[in-house]
Image (cartoon, rainbow, N blue to C red; front, side):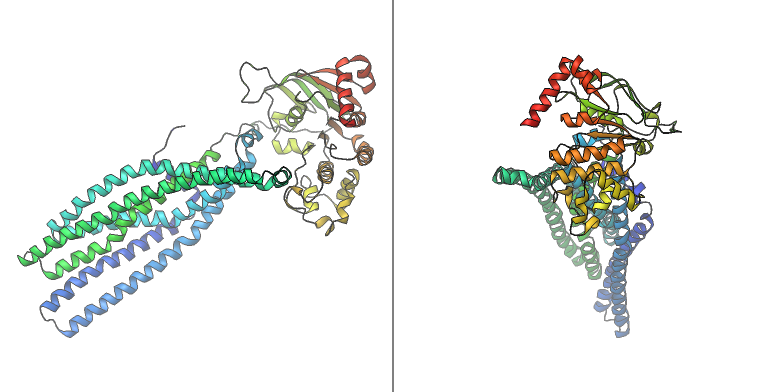
Length: 585
């Protein structure tokens, strides 16, 4: 990927900051105004010192003192105004960036999420966006104001005396040289630090989600040592960053001190030779004091800007990720949905499959008629779950077609397609929300009667006995429930959507035999009007379907009723006997 310069990278964020730009500009103007007031102070001090030397009148001195007071009050008011102007807009920009990132994550295909650790995405949505907000609200405003004030202040130093001004200019050259070198070194460390922070977030998330496994196997100490190692690596990177910042701060503090010392010696000589007045010398050093902090803050502002650059790069790594599964330009719709699902010469291979390896699916042909249920069986790793994932375009076929009522699913919008097909997975994922919200995820406008029917079909009536009934918040990923309870709620979620096609990826694996039979009996009432593709790992699930499809070597090698395939296919008998052995164990 082509590396962008700092300015080009930072400018990428401004389409998101358009609404905040006016107040940010006014905030910058307020900051410049406060600096201008500070620079006006030395002018009055020069007059004040010169008048004192000339024994000026008390009235003149009082007038100058009032002027100094007025400038001080003005400076304080402008500082307050600057903070008030820039505080709120930055938070709105951060919220907009977070919404854009979340929307993009929802739009990206499953293959993207397969590759990216969740901690890296989480660190971008929190730490990186917070850093961008702070830079927009403070770093950008102050860096702009400081650069202007350094230029203006340096010009004023030359206006007092060109010799003194030249001393400060010559001494500033090492600072700018060091700053240029600092940029390339610090950017590398900043990027490494933020990536390591994302890895650390991933470790924490995995440890929390897998806490039961870690406790069960007594591997808490092992994970702690791994976490400590990652933390030490991040600490080491942060120390290197701190050393780089300290290195530039040495220049930013010591060089102006040397400049001030040489300027003082030169200034005393110039006063002694009557080339400048004492008031001018005082004004010169008062002006140098005003631009001292802006000069010293360059290192801090530069490091903050480079951190923001890295955060923006990481943000746009996600936003620039291609949406490989998108809606078509010429959208089709299904005029009269019936629920006919057809696979025509479907091939599929994962993107990271080696060139010398065959496709996982190598020409699948299968038709499920409206109202028909088909069980899909095969040995482990044959591609059953992958085939079901293709039906809702969680992945796209490599070649071939999947048709719903004669329409290629790639010609439907993803939202329309997923309104016709509902899925229930073996690994039931529930959200930290109420039972009602989880079950009605795919049918938010469903009635209470629809909800009750879905729970009844899935044999999930236990939900009524939870502490708050259907309003019970079931906790993150539903871990407060048993595996069978989670599966039944996930099945109820698919049923509640009332699709024309139901795709079930072994959704009953965690149920006991009696509960499974009750669910199967109830499902038959749904499957009489709904087409179904059911991945089966139990003989009882196979018998739930009207017909059975045998997936072997990436193809459907046998199709028919359970009894037909038992009589005709040796491989089918082998797979069924394997299922029987698994159940027996």
